[in-house]
Amino acid sequence: NLIMRSTQTIGVLVPNLANPFFSMFIKGIQQASQNNKFIPIIFDANQNQELQSMYLEELIKRAANGLIIASATLDANDIDRILTRNGIPYLLFDQNDAQIGDRVWVDDYKGGQMVAKYLLAAGHRRIALLVGEQVTQNIQQRIDGFRSVMKQYRLSLPDEMVVQSPMTKLGGYQATDELLRLKPSAIFAINDEMAIGVYRGFQERGVRIPADISIMGYDDIDLADFITPKLTTIHQPAFEMGQVATELLIERIQNPRLMHQDKQLPLELIERDSVIAKQ
Ligand code: RIB
Image 1 (cartoon, protein in one colour):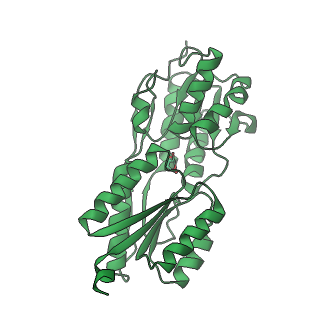
Image 2 (image 1 turned 180 degrees about the horizontal axis):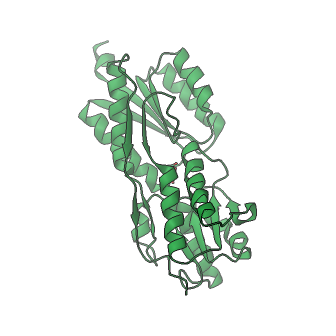
C-alpha cells in the first residue's frame, strides 16, 4: 500500500513518437513529473483508434492518477465519457477547445496567419497547403488562420490546392507528385515532418528549394535546422508545453476542485532558408 501511494503515475498517449515534436513534448512531461515525484507511462498510439482505446483502458485498470492525451483519432466526447465515469483527471492536448477542462495551448489561428502573411509578403500567390488526413482542432485553426489572410488579400484557397496525406515524413514524400501537379510557387506544410518528406521528393525529382518552390513548415523540430536548405517554420515550445501540461494535471490531481486553468504559450516565426522572395 505504501508503495502504491508513493508512485503516482501519469498516463500519456501521443500519436507519433517518431515525430520529434512529441519527443520534446515528452521530455517536458518527464521533467515536470520528476520534479513532482510522478512517473509518466508513455504510449505511442500510432494513430490507431483500437490501440488507443486499449491503452486507455489499461491505464484506467492500472489506476493511473491522471492522463495527458494527444490524439488525432479519439473523439473528445468519448474520452470525456470514459474518463469522467472513472473519475480520472485528464488534459487533452491538440484540442483548442476552451470548454473542456484545463488546457495548455498556442494560438494556432495566429500561427496560420503568420505563415500566410510571410509567404504573401515574399510575393507568393499560388500557395499549396499540405495537411494531414485527420485534422485535430488545433490544426483546423492553423488552416483557418492561414485561409483568413488569403481572403484578406482576396486570394482564394481552392480545394484543389489542399493536399492531404499522413502527417509524417513518408506522408509528405508521398504527396510530392500531387504537389508538383499544382505548380505552386510556395507550399505550407502543416508540420515540419511533412515538409521534410517533401524535401526528399523534390530532391529526387530535381526540384530545387527554394529556387523552384519555397516551403514553410510548422513546429520547429530539431531537424528543421539540420536539413538543406534550413527550414523556415513556426516555433512551438513543445518542451514547455509538456511541462505546463504536466503541472496543470498534477495540480488537478492534487486539488480536483481547482478552477479550470488556461495557459497560453507563444509562437515564433523562425526565418531560415527555405522561402525565397518572388521577383
Ligand atoms: O507535428 C505534430 C503536430 O501535432 C504539431 O503541429 C502539434 O501542434 C500537434 O498537433
